[in-house]
Amino acid sequence: MKTSMRILVVDDEKGAAETTAEILEREGYQCITANSVAEGKRRIDEMGPEIVITDLVMHDGDGMDILRYARKNIPEGEVIMVTGFGSVESAVAAMQEGAATYLRKPLNIDELRAVTDRAAEKVRLARDNVALQSRLDRKFGFENIIGNSPRMLEIFELLRQISATSATVLITGESGTGKELVAQAIHANSRRKRGPFVALNCAALSEGVLESELFGHEKGSFTGAESARRGRFECADGGTLFLDEVGDIPLSTQVKLLRVIEARQITRVGGNTPIPVNVRLIAATNQDLDALVKQKIFREDLYYRLKVITINLPPLRERAEDIPLMVRAFVREFGIEHERQISKIDPDIYPVLQAYRWPGNVRELKNCVESMVVTTRDEKLTLSNIPRHIMKEAEATEEEPGAISTNLSLAEAEKRLIRAALRRAGGNRRSAAEMLDIGLRTLYRKIKDYNLA
Image (cartoon, rainbow, N blue to C red; front, top):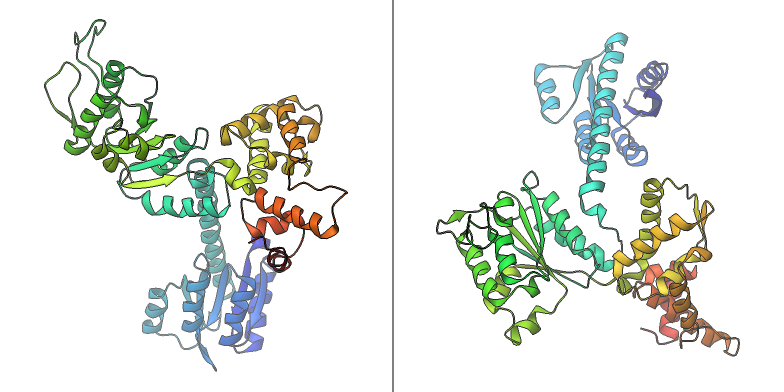
């Protein structure tokens, strides 16, 4: 553990700095020295030490400058203050500014070792906590939604802004784009995360069944109701209720749903007693609710109640630059699940998958990758593992106007290749430049030359 700990010793007395460093190096720490405040700040920027041991009084400033600079630039680090001019006032000031401890010169070697070891242990515990939180974030946070395209980065930023609130959210997008995954991420990063997350797909449920599922029912309220039953609103009390495919809710049920949202209480089917509920509502649809409102199929007042915050998830074909990242993540996931050791992915796979339209979006890509992992006989995924219908579409794409032909001039071939890369990258020029293995400035120049903007 000590060998990975970097310590910066700042003292304008060169001999004192080197002696301190030598003592700690014998304990297994990695040490570097600085002999001024300016050099100390530069070393902090260069090496990002976990521990800083600094003298208080120096010719070009004092250790308090180093302390404040370290707290700002390496907030997870520990600072130990050392001085030959100690006083109660300076000790209190240093501790108030965030120093781990305070030592007097001449240094007691045993005390120096003990103080440094305690600081190192504190840094190690902080690292462990960060690593644990990172694992939790990957499992429950936004990182579980894979993507680094501009569209997805905008969505991540919006999720961070709204998750801590209790605002109602409407998630729109085609089937398979991950609407429920986004809803779960909002819940997992909200103040309600310790409460239940309850989901209900409103499609294909008759009016009576849907109302019973939403609001519950009393015993004897209809044929077969042999006992009272709580609905999804009651089950989600204190947490989040996710209603998928809200565009399919019948008009009569929409009225009752609106009343629940406004009054924050439900009445079970066949009952008369209002039951208060504290629920955050997240709704999702793959339909155009604006159009349904104009057709009088969806209530306008309910629509505006649901769309306090709107998140529009793009289809996979519009963020094709995310596909390589998603493929690698899914290969790891299914390799573990199916106990298949996949050590390499042929990079030729990615352009083929990016050329496909993915009508089933992320869900279809995930199923495709699982099939590839399960059916491969090797530890490497190649073009031969891609399902035939996807390969056929990629082969058909070669006949499109953006494809390369030996009958074209070099300039026209280059133009079509750049256009195809931009299309596959969803318009992201940095990703397109990486696909083409050219510099970003070169790509910008060629886009201008070929009038591709």
